[in-house]
Image 1 (cartoon, each protein chain N blue to C red):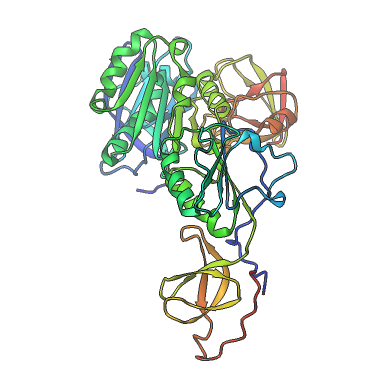
Image 2: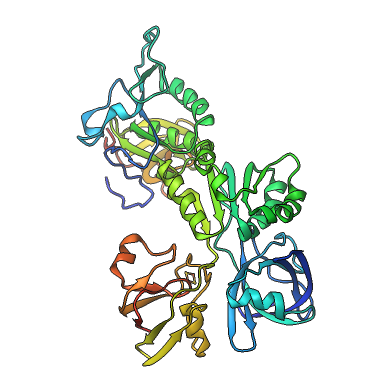
Length: 195
Length: 318
Ligand code: FES
């Protein structure tokens, strides 16, 4: 059940600096880069780093230079995403983005980078933290976030959805398919497998 | 119209654009519409000269929407490959030429946010086919055409219909006065580069882009096989047990074809990989964009459309 053998299930790697890039922007869903997210030799000083601290008390005048070594804190991921959109609109070719965080965080960044015309060759993703999934109900098109179980009630239509490994990059979500479509009411027990 | 058989074309019109450039308009011999060719496509013409048959690839400059004719622009240079000289001197309106259906190895990217086009000399031709589409789509683009001083006028005339309100520059001082690194370093994210022209220009563009952090997937090169000539050598086709002389102005592919053997090929410019043949013995002077550096070093394959032998003999498994 944990490996459904589906190819669209994204694969991630520990972050390693891409020497072919000219500028490097590191985006972390948290206050610091966890040791499991990057290679031992990952030179964080070569990157401009954006972190999400989830506090209102963002230090008054942080180092806001757009330069390697600078660290810029954000109150929330939404705060970081809107700054990223503005930043990418005025960036030049040669940028590499490195991101470490939950799948929601990574694929929201993927969407913003894709909008700006960046290709997968210019992005490096490492999945750290919660394995909880964002589930797209294929029946009512509602997204249910933070799903940890193999079966979940859709937050839109209430259907019991089986959480598939089929991942849509466009929606940045896994597909959820009604589990009792053929035999209504026959819902197996949900197991917690995406903790 | 059968899409993959050869297409007989009639030379409808030949226009002299400059002392060395001619534009040929070719229509379907039996009338009707020609197969569509997306911007960036080329056709391969079979040219039957007095002493040999030549096959040359030419980029179409006619807009993709134009189905009643194919237009190509051909440069005649002093020591040019036989085909272009033949088109300039041996072809008259009304003549019939055979073409292979259009192939596109240089398409426009669908996901680019901006298109940066760089042409060198006659390398302007595929770029000319892009412009109507880019304008019609309202796409963001920037074009730099590198030119010798005497060609500035003709390139200006060719680009004039697309110039108003656009970033189109002609650099008449040749490549020396052209700030390639400056242009490549200020392009916005999501730009794709298309470069067509002499090999040194394409190599410089590709290496400068790579040094500035452009990912390889956003750099597109269209080669012309201009540097066809070199020292003569002998090619041995091992499976057939025949020996062929490859002349100074001939490519290995042309020499094989001259014996009547059909050899694989598509772009005839060292880009597509179709003409690759295994090498058994001898040293290859690689001139293609297809093989990786490791494959080139291994000396185990040759792209017959552009590469030659560095040794006096080259034994090929063919
Ligand atoms: S024919 Fe395309 S590489 Fe030779």
